[in-house]
Length: 250
Image (cartoon, rainbow, N blue to C red):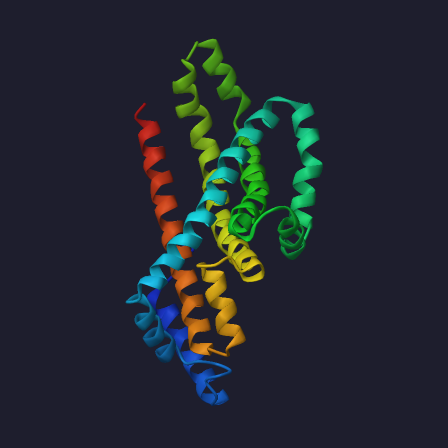
């Protein structure tokens, strides 16, 4: 039987937790590798602290701001580039440069110009922008020109044309870009915070755990980051799917 999709199965998670537990037992030193049980216990302890939720909210707000700005800018640039060869050729070197330059280089340079508080916004924006732009542009290029021509011939209103001709073919590309971009936004945003160490952020807590060899905290915060990233991704996909259904009813 053929399986489709990339959903996470509980049994697969359980297998990797067992591997983690066995590896921790083999190492025998929790300062090097904390067990999953100890990590979850520590995460539960952190969750009842107000400081945990303040740090989570601080970091999430900045990473999502960068992501949303990149999504809007990337989609807008892709729409322009799909209609103008000049725009496409002008934007191409910038997008190639952003994709090629290491995240650490951007972070170090950005620290010269921006405060640490805004660093994760900028880095998330830069890392997500090329993904949204490229995926959206690929989707727009894939739209059947015959369908566009038919819509023009029959004078289909612009809104209905966008909803029933363009959106259905672009949405899979855009949806994939959002999924990939959100994960990268969290990775790059947290990396920016670890280097910039803005006060009250998750990155600061990770840096503190490393300095003081608080391995349980390091693993607990890492699990928290993964969970926050997954929740954001699921919510974003749910919103996009709801939007797609709504457009079909226009």
